[in-house]
Image 1: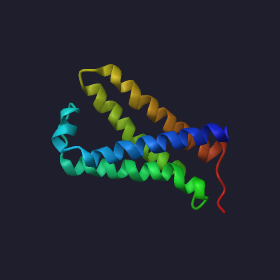
Image 2: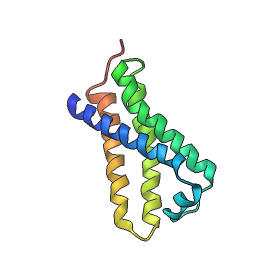
Image 3: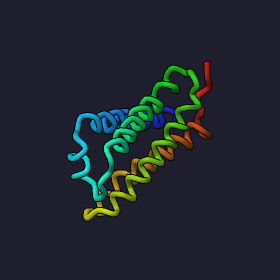
Image 4: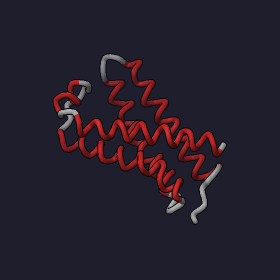
Length: 124
């Protein structure tokens, strides 16, 4: 179980590091063209910062065993963001694409539960 949790943590962490950093490489117009809702630039950049910090939070606290309780909190925070992304995707024309953020949300909930209850990481 511990190995499975680590695999999910690393893959999800890399996913959010990538997705958060792309919010700073693309223009606001390009990001809004992909969404059924026009978001202000500050909000998209705020989500990008949250995704980058959450991606780091999924990996580093548990890896370094410094405040490892932050890892499941990062997973919960990212799950909230991705649940919102699922709803926004359902508002668009291609409803089948909502499966991607939904599965990501479920994996984040699994990591949060796994690190809270099943296999918590003890601090140094």
